[in-house]
Image (tube, rainbow over all chains, first blue to last red; front, side, top):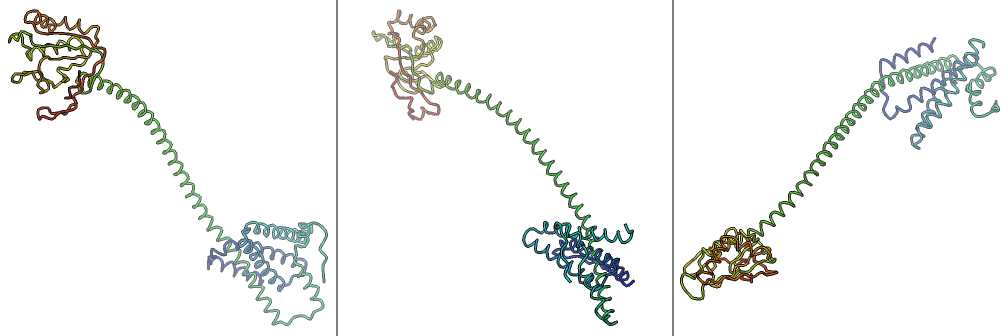
Length: 110
Length: 278
């Protein structure tokens, strides 16, 4: 319930305040989104496993986003930003897919 | 609690460890630890809510941003395509211009060729005319005629300017290419006339005997001359008044030129005035 409230507040803030992302941070936004999605799918799976914990979710969410952004930033400084972005997206994508598969197994018992 | 990494390659391990280990760790510890106080629990919930809100903001901003920039990207693309088309048109126009100019060059080259031929023809003509108008020196075979007053000294046996005019015209008529009287080249502006006691040519006084030189074919020129009225007249003069008229052919002789622009009336002597004809 409180999570739904947070979700609505966040969407409302994003839509109505329309914060413009600084140009310097724009390359990190998609990576941060993918990292956040990874944390979210992990949390959903943990919830279905019955081992969900808010503190773990918050930590995993924040650290995922920060680490992903840091890796891409490092890549940019080294001149391999796009390759490292691809690597991060691949790793996080695999995690998202396997978590989604676990959630599917839980929901449909398949 | 430590979990051994499952066997298999990197991707397999990645897929099997998709869930953060922390969830299991915390869940295992929760059984043993005492339950957190309600204050801690509320704070955790607020932070959780903030995290979910942050997630929502991230997603929304990202979506909005992408949608906004899509229009911009599309506009950029259109502008780029327009520019490419413009440049292509320009290249085509330039190509056309190159072809036009190439055709022009071809035409001009042809006309330049024709003009070169014309110039050569005109130069040849100028050379010929310079010879017959007497502006340049001429050498070649020809005849040399010596005319003198009758040895008797009679007034009727004296050579007059009209006689020399007649002889010069006769030589032209006989096919002479260049004529000089007393070393004075006859040009288009020359005159043979009497001034006082003497005969002048090109305003230079001559004294007998008068030597008339003409460039021409030595084989035909004397015979042709004798057939003209001038030749007849001199034959008569010699027969009737004892005038000296001697004609000899020469293999090589040079007549001086008399360039245009010399104004003999002012007494200025040009290079053609030298008496080097003999």
